[in-house]
Length: 200
Image 1 (cartoon, helix red, strand yellow):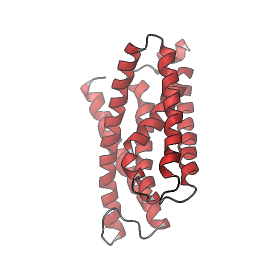
Image 2 (cartoon, rainbow, N blue to C red; image 1 turned 180 degrees about the horizontal axis):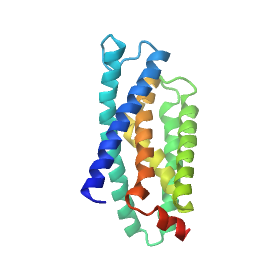
Image 3 (tube, one colour; image 1 turned 180 degrees about the vertical axis):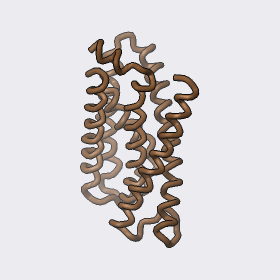
């Protein structure tokens, strides 16, 4: 990856974050007119502010993406047998899903949050992983699931402390979209899609 590709990925990611946050925020405003990112009246102003917040979400997701790439590089040098690192990623992904249920059960979140959020996150992550596998190899299943589940949740940890489901959705949705975009672009940026398919 050269500087030009990195800048393009970063720029596109934050723009996607802004768009995803604006769309998510608009949907939340329709469902809950009291939802606000800042204490101000006016839908248009709030949507603009949500879009600006999305730029931050995109930048944060980009930081998480490169943190994962570094972690993956280090872990692959530590674990001499690749399947051990893959198995660990699978275990952590399951653990994080269980942690979501633990964090949200019996809190100010709606009563069904403890199972609905982990289930929805898992289903959407499986869809992204399925697409990734179709474009690369079957070995991408667990790493993609790990990234989409664990990294997204780590990036969204502050909102789990709010007890507000609208705030949780507003932050997690753009982060998930940005992470999905980045993980799907990785093999294209590295020009490995064709090589991986031929090796499968």
